Image (cartoon, rainbow, N blue to C red; front, side, top):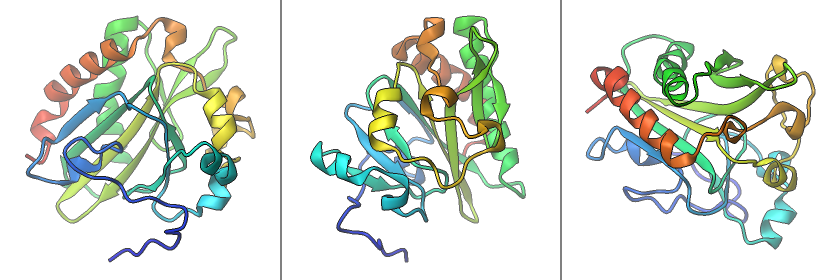
Length: 221
């Protein structure tokens, strides 16, 4: 059983079917798919990360922003209104992790294409990137996985409106980064789907429809 090493900083996930991190999909009595816009600002670190290394904890405390530890790996993120969280519960029937990230992206990429006519590319460990007007690839989605013997839980976050100010206030330079980041700061590395006129409610609808169609038979119901 995991014991939180920093209870002075990390708040427990409040849980429930509408938990703010999307982790309700780990409960097989609840729906296998959740696609939603966060209602408030929260910071989330990976399963084994040090909050004082990954977050600007002084700013989070000053602003009364909750800090959480997710059940899956991955890096630190901000969750906030203007983003879209994608949480999926799949049947664990393959060996490895990249196969599941690729599998979910087979639903996410066409979901974005259907409403924008632009195709995102996969980079790093399950990231999705958009080529911006200057010809540079910038991240619009990051993801993580939690695997058990029976299930794989995917947690991803799309940036739909500009989250750079929040990132710069609350996220430190990450301790680990994909090679394609190439040392770029938050503003140089990330963008948001709002630059191609995406709105959160439209994205939620499109992802839900594509995920149900493409991933439904592979889900753990």
